[in-house]
Amino acid sequence: MIRHFIFLVLFLLFSIPAFAKVSATVDRVTIEQGETFLLTIQSDDSTPELDVLEPFFNILGTSRSSKVSFINGTMSSLKEWLITLSPKNTGVSVIPSITVGKEKTQPIRIEVVKAKVLNAAQGADIFLEVSLDSNSPYVQSQVIYIARLFRAVEIREGSLTEPEINTAVVERMGEDVTFQTTRNQRRYHVTERQFALFPQKSGSMVIPPTVFDGQVLATQSSGQQANDPFNRFFQQQQRTRRVQIKSDALTLDVLPQPTTFTGENWLPAKRVVLGESWSVEPPQFKVGEPITRTIKIQAVGQTGAQLPEFKDLPSDGIKQYVDQPKVETGVSDGSLVGIREEKFAIIPTTSGKLVLPELRLSWWDTVLDKEQLVTIPSRVIDVAPASASVAGNQPTQIMNNSDSIQNGTQDNSIVNVQPVGDSGFWQIMALALGFGWLITVIAWLYQMKKTKVKYDAEQGTSNDSESLNEARKRLDTACKNNNASEAKSALLAWGGAAWPENKTRSLLSVGERLQDPNVIQAVIELDEVLYSHVDSAWNGEVFWSVVGQKLKKPRNYKEGKIRSLPSLYPQ
Picture (cartoon, one colour):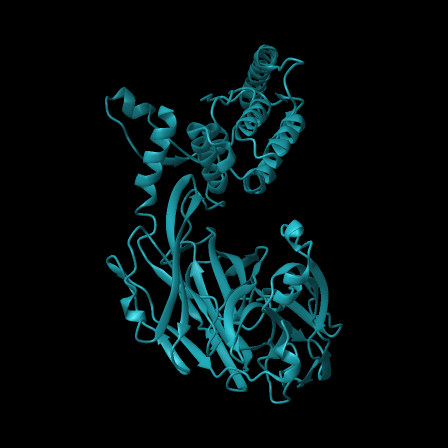
């Protein structure tokens, strides 16, 4: 219990300064009039001042949550405020800077467009709506496909198909967004899903309809309910009906690569940034000593896989070795952002002034519809001569101090040493040293073998101890039954089988060993439930989704026993 309290105190102390800056984001930047959207503010424990929003937005609700992160052994917490807003006016609007403690958020630009008018077919309880941000994109450029499911009834289960196009790459963009809107004076709940399409062939391309297939709650009129003599006996049983609806098919007119483009690799994007960094800033060059140069490309409206590679450009007096590239894709402001990072080991072979050549990347600006160029200018570097330890062609040298020692002084002069002739002295010394080294290794192996036998005897588990799989199954059953006390017993049994050399006596020790902030938070909540003796308040399904997937076999584990040698520095 004392350890638990100390952990919580340290958690609070060290998590406060980790996030001094605040940030504000929205789930969408284009909103129809009457729709709601979500503003998320991340900060420390300071409360945002939301009064500045009232002239421009209706504040429909606020909530707060906490997040825990575990980075490089340091735990930090972060507060999140979720504010549901509805714009008061159409047109371009700006979420102003919001004061949070001593910090301020950055303003956010959004666009509020007029609401669409529904036709008769769309006046149903549930319908689909799809749209594109461009009908005439260039080949291999990004097109945003948005599917929206409108519903005025409760959905019990359902699935939404994703675009399947043979001539396009389809990437899903983040998680679904939910909000509310009004159409024809009727309130709808909306689920929005976005995809990035990259046509791989010019010409006409058809996007097939999106299909929703699911079960919705069937409603009865008041007259039906009153006339049904059995209605009062079946109030707890709610009827559902199956629905299947389709959206419209859409057509793209995909444009080919412009003939005026002069670049080596076709790269259509909204924005491209090219930059470099060094392992040492500022870089200092010396003959024979490597220094790492990192080249990074960021392209808005592209995936990381579509970005071109940079080849090592030849340069006199310099050797370059390229590492495996780091490629990733993210989402920012309603677009995919491709990132490619390449590292080069730069090794000068001669001293003096050397030149790193210019790097150039041509790309097509899909916003301005023209070719653009980003560069890293050529660079003249000063290379220092190699140090004595690096120069491989220097003669072997030693200190000759015998005469000066006899005279009571020390002479630091350096003289060349010539190779020894046929006396055989060094060969005899080498054999003697090798024989001594062999005896030492044999003695060390013998001692380690004795230590391992003793350790295995002390740490081996009995036949009555549970295996990892048995303990994990027990935990799964306890979580399904929402049995907090049994879950604690099973998790401790798993920890005892996973780390028999250091028995785990508390839930918190298991969480710390797994080194996952979500697991630590989950076991803290379980401990609190057990302390208050209220099992019904504990959600076993949520606990299993967080902790269960982390319960994997530790490295070198076998039948409840760690087979590796004991640590040289046991805790």
